[in-house]
Image 1: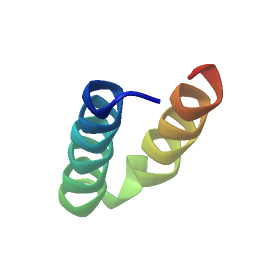
Image 2: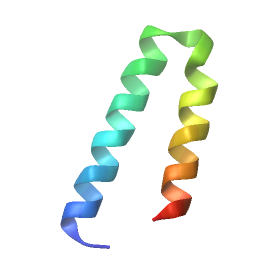
Image 3: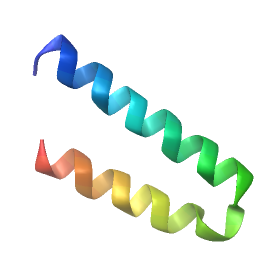
Image 4: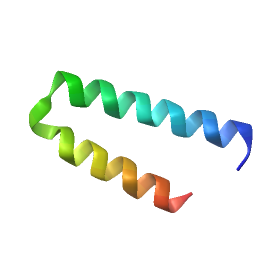
Length: 41
C-alpha cells in the first residue's frame, strides 16, 4: 500500500468514527461499511 492510500483509509476511518460518535444508532453500519472498504483495498 502506498502512503497516499494509507492516508485515504485513515481519513475514511476518522469520518466513520466521528459519525459513530455523533449517531450511535448507525455506528454498526458505518463500521460495516469501513470493513467492506478495507477488504476492497
